[in-house]
Image 1 (cartoon, rainbow, N blue to C red):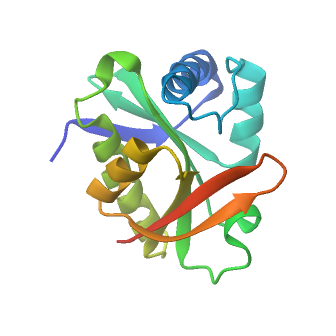
Image 2: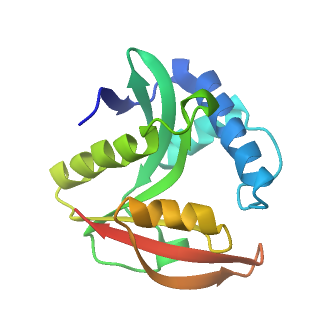
Length: 164
């Protein structure tokens, strides 16, 4: 299906991950999606993210072209759940690789990883008012299962899941 590999990020990847996340934040801001904030990502923030979740880099021909993080629970958004899912966060693709199916391939590879680890569902959340992003996830096979409001940020968040 693809020529993309997914591997666990290393400290040497901090700078490129921060750059890709900053590009993605700017892309979101251009679409009035402020759920990731307005600031550029720093290597320190990426390192903190690596401490809280498994961060992956997606490579095509040895070039890092995207990133995603995975958690085995997400009580803040999804509440207490049985251990059947992997929770996708911070899916981001390098600007120069938009429209080249990188996000789709990342989700495909991540789904295989989650399945290999004994779970059968991928879950994610996104800004409910970012209609193009919601449609994108639906095209990738995710089904909207609800909407919640994050009171601390006053965001409406759409909840999506996909059986693997």
